[in-house]
Image 1 (cartoon, one colour):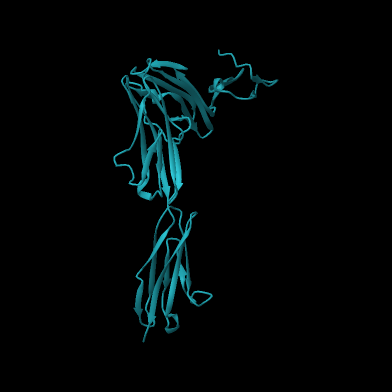
Image 2 (tube, rainbow, N blue to C red):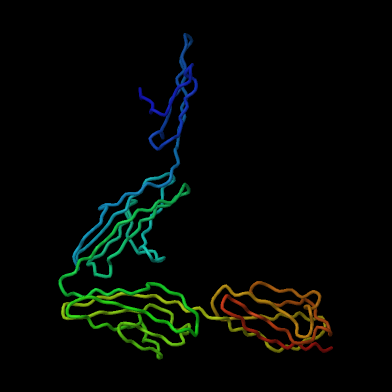
Length: 320
């Protein structure tokens, strides 16, 4: 016969079992037995206790490791429903690529580098909540080996602006700092001075990952900055000229390149409103099921995002 937990109490006649402030240890199957001189009867009740995730790390850290050492940290979580696990680095929104086996999510490095130093977060989530646990990893370098750091790991800028990325490096002898761009040359309009990369009048094509490399006789170290360039919309109309007969259907499509979300608004030049029966859609279409002679004119689409706006015109001619 099992003994009830200290938060489970029987009523005066033992017909009611009350569990106050349920916890995971209360989960299980309960058996009610009723007996008298005529016989005995039983009934079962199953209690499932849902709870937010509980997380633990192995090892728990902080971890002090040497450059080139293999490192792995296992994250385990309990909870009901069973939680999902993911790793991220503090200060970054990017989810890390990890290995998951038998409900253990592991972050690992075959050989750590100085730039891998940082705080890493394992996040467990289910319908009852989210729990995070952190581990600090400190990669210790040998005397004189370079260690590169950047002032900003992620940035979003507006097209046409001047952008600076600052890289610092310590080491002996003093490291030489160079900049490069992942899978692409550096933008044409750039300068590097004192570890600072300056980009003039950035465009959407300049988006990507930039790499600071610090090198001396003891080795090298890299640090990364990811830049996204947001752009205002550039609108066009398809078609930009159309000839129809009364009763024909009209469909104009406004297209816009630029950073999303983009909103579209149609109007008719010289008129306060669109013709009766005209309809617009969120994706930039202007629709008229049956045009009339009076619907001839120039129609304007204005595309707008948080940076700016752009206009495009379409000429519509209705002739019998």
